[in-house]
Amino acid sequence: MPHPPAPPTTLSRTDVLTFRTLTAQVVGVTAATAVVAVIITALVAVPLAVHSANRQAREELVDTSALAVELLSGERPAARERIVRQLRRDDIAVYLIRRGVVDRAGLPDRVVQQVAGGALVNTRGRVDGRSAFIVGRPLSGNSGGVVLTRPASTGTAGLVLGGVWLALLAGLLGGVGAGAVLARFIARPIRQAAAAAAHLSAGDRSVRLTGGGPAEAAELAAAFNHLAAALATSEGRERDFLLSVSHELRTPLSTIRGYAEALADGVVGADGVPKAGATMVAEADRLDRLIADLLVLSRLEAADLPLDVVRVDLVELMRAAAEAWAPRCAPDGPRLLVELPPEPVLVDTDPGRVRQVVDGLCENALRIAPQGAPLVLAVRAGPRAGVLEVRDGGPGFTDDDLAVAFQRGALHRRYRGIRKVGSGLGLALAARLVARLGGRIEAGHAAEGGARFTVEIPYPDREPYRTRTLP
Figure 1 (tube, rainbow, N blue to C red):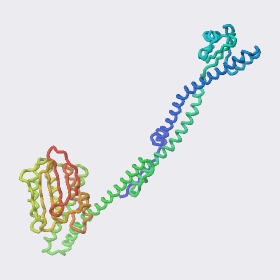
Figure 2 (spheres, helix red, strand yellow; figure 1 turned 60 degrees about the vertical axis):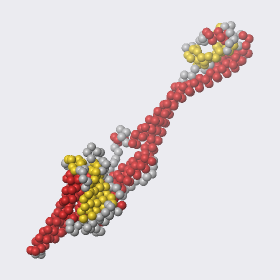
Figure 3 (cartoon, one colour; figure 1 turned 180 degrees about the horizontal axis):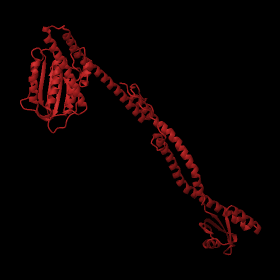
Figure 4 (tube, rainbow, N blue to C red; figure 1 turned 180 degrees about the vertical axis):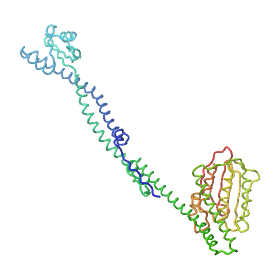
C-alpha cells in the first residue's frame, strides 16, 4: 500500500512575526543581547568618561593658573585685560584679589580668604551657582592673588548617551545579521531532518542524513538514520512474515481445494472418500490453528487479551499436559519423559494461557524430534519463580538461532525447505503470552542434544520478569 505524500512544511509570516520559528527566536535573542551589551557598556563608560574629563580639566586649570600668575604679575593693565579675555574665551573665569578684596562677586569667601592669606587653593565648589573647579595662587609680593575657575564637565554624560543611540542601532543591526547567520547554521540540520522525515513518511526508506555540523546535529542525524534503518528492517521482516503466512495459508487451502475438486469430479472413489475427508479435516485444523495464532498474537500486541489469574500448581498442570501429549508421542514419535518434584509449585497465573504455551512448545518439539528422541516436560521450584522446562533431543538451535528465536517468522524463514517448520508464529506467541503473565521465557541448548525452553512464572507477590532470550 503506497504511503500518502507528506504535506510540505512551510513557515507562515505569522510564525515569523510571533517568534515561533527557531530563526526568529535566535535573531531576537542575538539582537537583544547586542542591545543589552551596548546599554551596559554605556552605563559603565559614562561615569568613567565624566571622571576622566573632569580630571583632565582640573589638571589643565592648575597648569593655566601657574602661567596666568606669572603673566599677570609683570604685565601692564592693558596686557592683563587681554590675558583675562583670552582665558574667558577658553571658558576660564579670572578673579583678581587685591588687599583681600576680590574684583567681582561669585567666589566662595573661604577661597578669597585663603588666597589673600598666601595659600594655594585647588578645590571644587559653587561659583555663581554652578559647580566649578577652583584654582587660586597668590601673586608675588603679597599683593593679592589670582583665582581661576572652570565649570565642571556636565555635558560629557549627555554626549556619551547621545552617541549610544548610534551604537544601539549598530548593535541591533549587527545582532540581527549575526542572529540570521547563526540561525541559518543551527536550523539547517533541523530543516534537513524535517525534509528527510517527509521523504521517510512518504515511503522512501533509503533517505539518510549526513553527520556534519555540531555534535547535536550529528546525534540527530545518527538517531534519524538508525530510525530509518530500523523501520526498513521492520518492514522487511513484516513483508517476509506476510509472505510466510500467505504461503502457510495457501498450502492447506490448495490441499483442501484439490481434494474438494476431486470429490466433486468423482475422481476419488468410494474407498478413498474417508482418506480424502480426513486429509481435508487435518488441513482445516491446520488453518484454524494458524488463524487462531494470528488472532491471539494481534490481541497480545494490542494488550487487550483477557487473563483469568488464579492459584495454580505447576506440577499438576505439567502432569495434565504430559497425559494429553502421551498418545501423540507413541508409538512412532519421540519418547516422552516427565520430571516433576514431589511437592507442589504454586503460582498465581492463568492456567489456560500457561497450558497454551506448553502445548505450543510440545508441538514444535513433536514436529522436529526424531522417533525415539527424548521429549522432557519438567517442573522445578526456582528461588524466585516456578520453572517449567520443555527439552527435546531434536536438531536444536545454533547460537545465531537463539538470538532471533522469538521473532515472528525468523526461524521459519531460516529453515523452510530444510526441515519441518510451522507457521513461524508459535515461539513469538509463547514469548508474548509469558510476558503478559509477568514471567520470563528463555531458549537454549538442552542436555538431550536439542532445544531447551525455560518458562519462569514468579511466585505470588514477586516482581514480574521481562521476556528475553539467552544462549
